[in-house]
Length: 243
Ligand code: BV8
Image (tube, rainbow, N blue to C red; front, side, top):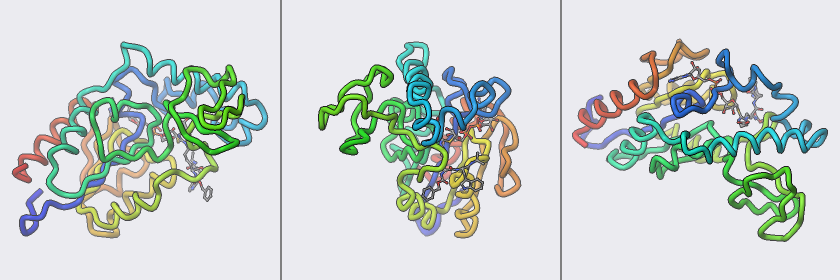
């Protein structure tokens, strides 16, 4: 990466469940993945929540409880992206599909959770978003309006509009480098971001354990565990930028 006229290009990073795999969290579509154990239609759609709210709350309560496990924490890939955020001299945005809190705990600041966050709950009555109680299945009261039993996970289900799409579109329109890390490229609209970046002549790089569904769209693809690939990539990027 050479610096253009002294201005560092804008960087957009997209992450998926693969970046949290070495922290002990399951991915979705690997052989031991979450969607191999439960069906999306049963736990991750508004229809599922209307049909059987207890089952959906239990599904997210169990995943939220994992985040409280002392054995689960940010890994070297999360830490490297937080360092890139701190030191990159140009525009930077980390867009994550993940609902875990590991990027934030690693120190990432310019961070956007496009599929929401397990650690937050949203009130169906007043719309307030606040830190989630450990278990929503117990129908806790909304801290803003006091309504009991009206809290849902602040997570984007299938068929719901992802969060921050305007900010993401602006960042992709301005970026000179798009890096996709730990995602199978099977969920839209995130899977389409590489095409948007290419359309703006950005350099596109995939760092993933194995080729994703969209691998052919990337200028460059490196395959291996994120805890090895991401620190290496970030070190080289910062070195080339003189940052
Ligand atoms: C919407 C939160 C419209 C919930 C999630 C176009 C074409 C086809 C379908 C659609 C389309 N447009 C819309 C759709 C429908 C749908 C969709 O994409 N369906 C797919 C399944 C076909 N999309 C939607 O419904 C989206 N909404 O479009 O709304 C709209 C418009 C107007 C008004 C209203 C609505 C919403 C999608 C968001 C759903 N919520 N997450 C939760 O977490 O429970 S998405 C879900 O998949 C996951 O949560 C995850 O975030 C996401 C992506 O998965 P990945 O992160 O990629 O994980 P995966 O396991 O698949 O892959 C892991 C990768 O890591 C693998 O490649 C593996 O090799 C790699 N890996 C493993 N270990 C490592 C590693 N890499 C590095 N190191 C390692 N150690």
